[in-house]
Every structure is written in C-alpha cells, then in structure tokens.
Length: 449
Ligand code: NDP
Image 1 (cartoon, rainbow, N blue to C red):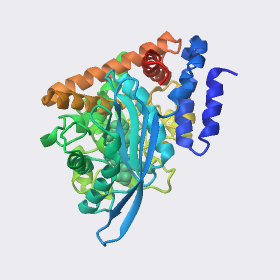
Image 2: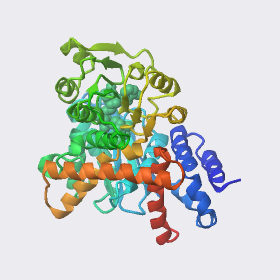
Image 3: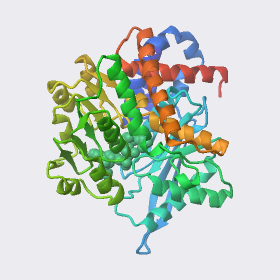
Image 4: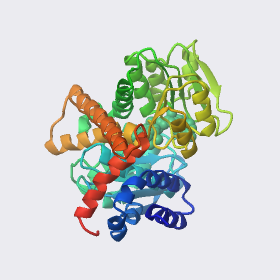
C-alpha cells in the first residue's frame, strides 16, 4: 500500500466521527501523491504525513456566561493549534451553532497550507465556539467574548498564536476579545487581527478576503486571455467575504447577480447594489428580504431546505462561493456546467464538495480552491501583525497594493507547482503541493518535534 493510502487509512480510523476533517485530509493527501512518491522513503522515516495530519494540540473548554435574563448559559470553546513550523499559529475564530471539533480541525488543517501560500511567516490554527451571536444583545456578546478569552488567553500571544475573525466573529467580537486579553495580561500587543482602526487594526483588512479573491480570479482570467469586464458573476453568502468580492468584481466591470444567506437568496438581474446590501447586513444585521424590499429589480427566494443552493442555478460566467463549507454539491456543479460557467473560485473555506470539484475539473471549468483564492484575508492579517510590531500604520493603498501583489503571486505559484508535477490547470493540486513543500522543508530542518 502506498504511504499516502496508509496514512489516509490511519487518519480515517482515528477520526471516524469527523467528516469535514476527513474530507479536507483526503483532498489534500490525494493531490500530494506525486510529491510524496518522489520522497517516499524520507517522508515515511520522518513520519511527515502522520505529523502533518495531527494537530500540535487541540484545546477544548467550557464557556459559561450570563444572558440578559440572568440565566447562565454554557457553550463549548475550541482552539486547534495545528502546525507552527513556519510561524506562530494564525487562523480565525468561528462563532456558529454548527461548530464542533471536526469543523475546527478541517479549518485548522487547511489553514496550514493557505498560510504557507501567502509567503508570510505564519503557521496554521483555528478556533471558535458553538455560540450563536445572532439575536444576542451587545452585552450578551460581550459577556460571552470575555468568558471565552478568560480561558483562551493562556494559549495565545503575539509570537505564539494570533486568532482573527471568521463566520460570526466580526469587528464587535474582536473588540470585546481584545479588551479582555489586554485586561487579563496587562499588555498591549497584536494578539488578535481584524482589530478596529483606532487600536491597531489595518486598513483594508475588512475588504481583504473578498478583494483578494477577485484579484486572484482576475489574474486567472487574464492568463486565459479574458477579464471580468462584462462577465456575469454568481456569488453566495452576504457576509464579509461576499460583500467585498461583489464590490471589487463590480468595480472591474462584472455584473454580480446573486447573493445569499442561511435562509434565502437574491437574484438581481440588474446587478447587486452593494450599498443596499451593506446597509442590510452590516448596519441593520437583517435578512435578505430587506434587500429585496429596497430593490424593485431583485427577486427573493426562500431556502426550501438546507440543500437548496439556488444561486448555482443562475446562468453565470464566474461563480464565487463565499458562504460556508459544502454549499456547492454535485447537482450544483452540474447546473453550473450546463449553464456554461467558465471559472469557479472559492471565497469560503471548502464550499465545494469533493464530487463537485472533480466534476467541475473534468468538465474543463477553471477551479481554484479556497486555500489559494481566499488567502487574502490571512495575508492582510499578517500585514496587520507587521504593522503592530513596527508600531506603524500603512495607508489603504499600500496595504491593498501588497494584497494584490500577494494574490497574483499565489496564482503563479500554484500554476507553476501544478505544471512542475505534470498537472497543468489543476489548481487544487498546485495549491496543496506549493503550500505543503514549504511547511515540510521547515519541519525537516527543525527535526522531530
Ligand atoms: P460572515 O459571518 O460574515 O458571513 C457568512 C455568510 O454566509 C452569511 O451571509 C451567512 O448567512 C452565510 N451562511 C452561513 N452559513 C450558511 C449556510 N449554511 N447556508 C447558506 N448561507 C450561510 O462570514 P465570512 O464572510 O467572514 O466567512 C464566509 C466564509 O469565508 C467562511 O467559510 C469563512 O471561513 C471563509 N473565510 C473568511 C475569511 C475572512 O476574512 N472573513 C478569510 C478566509 C476565509 P447568515 O447571516 O444568515 O448566517
């Protein structure tokens, strides 16, 4: 049995109850086969694949907090520190009722390769809680964040582990978390990224993941002789990543006709009005029904069931899934191909199932996985860390230019890696191989640890 298959079997046996983690490991290890085969003896001896699929540590803890009615609530907190071979652990905190160890491990595992692709010195980690900020008052969110940090602070630090935002963790939550860390540690350091601009945040961090996704897609299109101008684009999600992806794509001449949230989706044939969307989602924190109410050209479709991903039935040239994992399945991929989609680039983490990815690739669709195409967020977080260390703030234009440069570099890095291993155009393999090689080189140099 090959070394990859052997380790895949072991990982499956040890983590049988963690489907998302197994999905991510299966995708990555399968695409690493050509590299692993070249170094099989050395990697086996050093147990490289066993080590890279086992987190350095996983921390789980109780998060008690008191709601506005005086009732004590208990949530579960997580931080998975996956690999720090190339820098301090770095990765967001997800606050969503679906959060469990499998989801945090899959995200932490992917983060290792993504962070490596940014070319910046950051290792991989991820955390979060099954707490749902939706419908909670600001005071409830603050009490939760303070309780969460009262345990988490022991394991993080500017040179140790630097968490950031993710689903459910925006500027408000980062502010409460930072305040509590500062109070407990009595130290002012860049322990979190995504901070507000008045206390160490970076300009362009809010826009970075969505803008970065579009910068990488723009380079992909350019290298295939086309561009965004006049293209119809389908986007899912209506959160941080989706909003700024829509804004940047439209500024490049595309017409973005869809967006979605967990209860429904919008088809707006005249193009999504970003100002209205931002008001509904960032200011009012309301449902997309409010968007439809404000835009006569928009149709609102209620989600029929959890597998209803209606946005992918809309005819488009480019699809940018920006909501959550496994939101684009085989049926959705078939609908996109039948409608002539040209490129699919992931804004979310693992939004496309394994079967859907294979189908898109087999049918000639240009497909870039999230660990490459959504790396702009973490890359800009690393730029925030640099600014904090320097005690300086860079201008929006300076950060945005560095972000664009990084995303263009990532595209060429994954394209070159795919070509080097005889898989031209397979950007999933290219991303995994390029990310993996750097981390493994560092792991080998540092000995068995
Ligand atoms: P937000 O919480 O800002 O937005 C998430 C959006 O997706 C919301 O519109 C949400 O709708 C929707 N959504 C969530 N779950 C589902 C679901 N099951 N079905 C349909 N829609 C859903 O998160 P972000 O925009 O920050 O993150 C989106 C994705 O991008 C995640 O996969 C995240 O890990 C990834 N990512 C984010 C980065 C960042 O910098 N923010 C960086 C790299 C990756 P609703 O409001 O109704 O819940």
